Image (cartoon, rainbow, N blue to C red; front, side, top):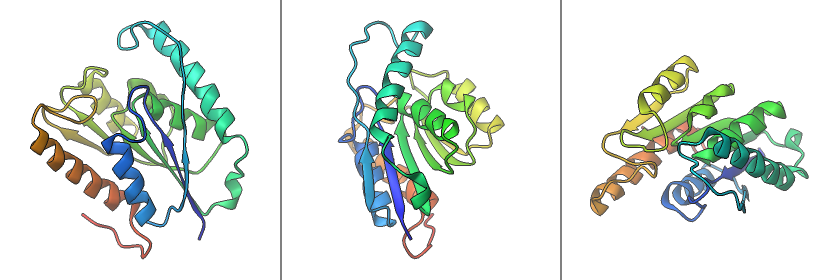
Length: 192
């Protein structure tokens, strides 16, 4: 069975940060041996948290970069396709899958409101109650409407972290266990 995982990072949250780093480990353990890591570069300046126009321009710039990096992939050769994404990467991954009509499973770490403008056949999401990039109540309503299960972490920011390092280790462990349960492993076993 051929499996591919594509990682769509956030702007400042790169693939070497905990959620994506360990998310990739979990995917690899589940048999996703072909790994593609999207890398962005952008000179867009401005308030991406509160300025919709700046956010839109950033999305368009990063989407084009991701599209170029994925242009040589023949998606039809894969039995399973997994997109792991973070922040604005959740919007890029979701829109890319829909635009290219790819049957994808999504792991959405701290999605933005715009993520839910796109359909998700099979997805799971994670958010913290102190996420300053999102209206958490709106994200919860959007995920419910989209039928995307979402796991909420009390007191966590946009990186699913708190000010307590040991608590952060517990959070990453719980997040990875849930991610592993969603992805499964090579034998088809699902962990909870």
